[in-house]
Length: 88
Image 1 (cartoon, rainbow, N blue to C red):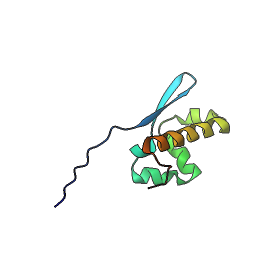
Image 2: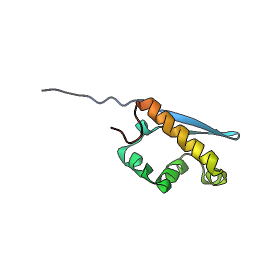
Image 3: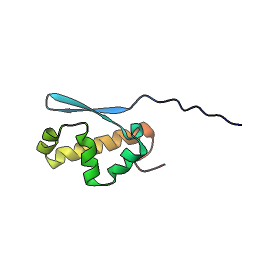
Image 4: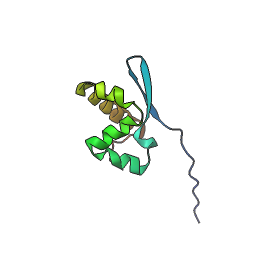
């Protein structure tokens, strides 16, 4: 019989600097399946980032700036896992 022991990996994160403040956001490979599934909608993605970046700061961001954060998070998630978000 084959045996496998899952060894927890160190959480992979992205550090985002906004003005004088820094925020650490876990990359996709460090999320649970449920957390990752919630990113399927714009509202789910916004709620995810609100867990790590205060609402007052997110609400002041221009859409171009917010989109940059989302895109760099997606790029870093893909780079860390070797796959695009949603690929298995």
